[in-house]
Length: 621
Ligand SMILES: Cc1cc2nc3c(=O)[nH]c(=O)nc-3n(C[C@H](O)[C@H](O)[C@H](O)COP(=O)(O)OP(=O)(O)OC[C@H]3O[C@@H](n4cnc5c(N)ncnc54)[C@H](O)[C@@H]3O)c2cc1C
Image 1 (cartoon, rainbow, N blue to C red):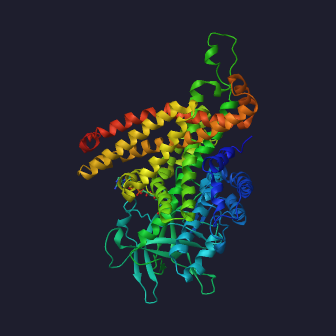
Image 2: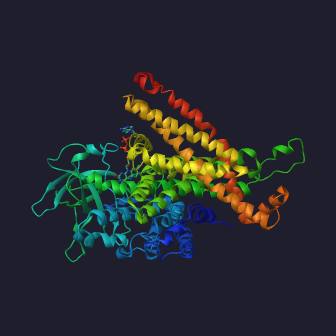
Image 3: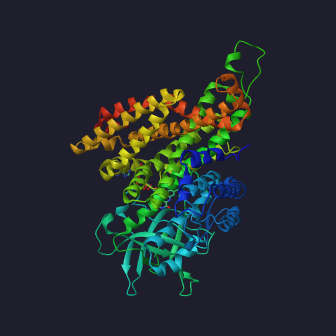
């Protein structure tokens, strides 16, 4: 019986069998870790997710966050859970021990985070934003700033946020109005309003440290003139204790569709002219600095999509096994036929396979991104390091946008599996859908992610990152072709990968010849195509390994030539069932989704600009 949130067997498969993360433990940086350590911590992470975070899920949604007398309250149940989360050492386990972490590989933390995200994202974000803000100070702050803020943040004593958005400056951050004025002592007076700030104000920590984007008076318009400031909610005294309120006031807590346990706030800075900020990094380099946090946050959002999808899928499978409804289609002429569990109906089963294959593919993609970050850290040469960092660059918009969009689709299908009950609050899937939606919007909408992919990421390092990824896919195709049972599916991946590569060349050509509106117009469907090809790759890569394991088991028990014996083993032996399920995911995806790639590429290649050419007046009367 699983934990109802995440298939931990699949997590371990991706870590140890698919990615082979034990390679990391042979490097100097990670030499103190072993597979046993990772598994032991994994058990602890699972306990934290199931016993501490999960109980906050429904209650947090029902109670929500409230602003009263200028103070923001979070759901009561969050207080004790946050305390336990901190005490358990989950704030920053992949940070160096020098700052309070344990130095574990990012990919390992990624797998733990999936459990936490599946249990309650609204809760997890308080710690996640704090970690991101502390990392900014670690990288760009002075020693004084580190001593003043960073250590307390890594410990979870104080929390953090990221303050970019303003009512008139969402996607277009460069049009922000928040102003900074130099003060004689080298600090800055900050005035302005930020909106939609996640974990912007709350009662889980006595101080909140805001990294705030603002323009110093006289600096140029647009992103080039933006700087970033550390603005604490409460000023910090010389001895490190908390001083007076820093003229940061909460104007509102948004009433949202989901994620109700996370306080999304409007923050007013300097209404009384007394808000003081410290420059972080150099003047006019605010966007460069903030991009570190944004890139990390984009990967984090990908994990939200995965966490929700995983939990929704696990619930849907369980429900489909238990819910008895309708007689099976093959008994349609039998008046005495008994009703069966809905997992036996082909349409439900197909939906579940769709969900299973996307969950597993998205899991592998996000873990791979984490693994690449670790590999970049331990790379022996500059070329190696560039290769691994290149994968991270290329994958960031895909992890963010594809995981959140497909994650939402998985939640949507989970509701369908539940039928009418899925639409009601007695079951958790309606909350998964509500909570999940925001992931396609914040950290740069998915439309913006696709523009980043097409406009920047494909051509980075003169296309070397993309070619390296194509090389990975090629290796998977070659390995799968060598296995009789997978040959057909390898062909389907090869065809779709070739169609993608051809499309990329055409889009690049269009961009160079001045016809740049075509790649821009089709950026979103392009990202979906690319994501699907990657799913095909990761799933088939897994299937190759699973086939090898299955064949070894069949041989050991003398079942290699008997389909009947193999079917029996699948029912009796959980490991065999698991590996057979991995092969099925890859085959299902390859036959169900990959054949659509060519047609979708053709649609883009045609380059029609109907959506642009249609008159605005024609959209509606
Ligand atoms: C619950 C929640 C939490 C949030 N947390 C934070 C936070 O912690 N910190 C923070 O700073 N912000 C946060 N945000 C803000 C979020 O990042 C923005 O909502 C988002 O960036 C989009 O900005 P906008 O809402 O103003 O939409 P707009 O910028 O008005 O965009 C509306 C639509 O137009 C599209 N669009 C706009 N410009 C372009 C363009 N140039 N090309 C193509 N399409 C375009 C967008 O893709 C979108 O589809 C949060 C928002 C919510 C709802």
